[in-house]
Length: 124
Image: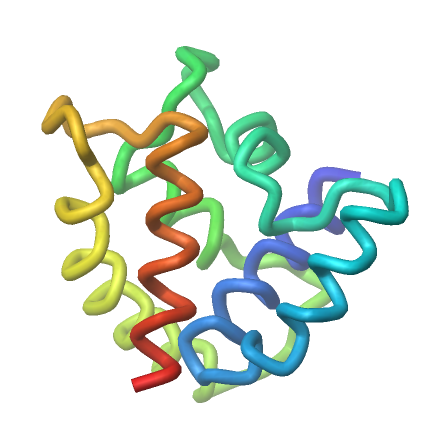
């Protein structure tokens, strides 16, 4: 089950980085209003999945590891390394801007800000 969540989170962040998430955004919003299962871009679910030390917040390292962790079900080869480099650059850029209280960790509200930053960056 955790492998599936990692894969879902990796796919979401990959889509955000490549700009495809914009097309899915309207579908996700309408599903949230219809009472669908939480999506991988739900801050609470992201924290529950990636929070290794169970402190209720995510560090840069936890987000990076959770989004790029190798999963035996994947087999994307060289594009995986490319994704990791690009994702780390964007995470570095957006993490500090999303960390409103400057404590080096992101809570639910700050995770929402991070997701929005990834999405907005792709729209430019």
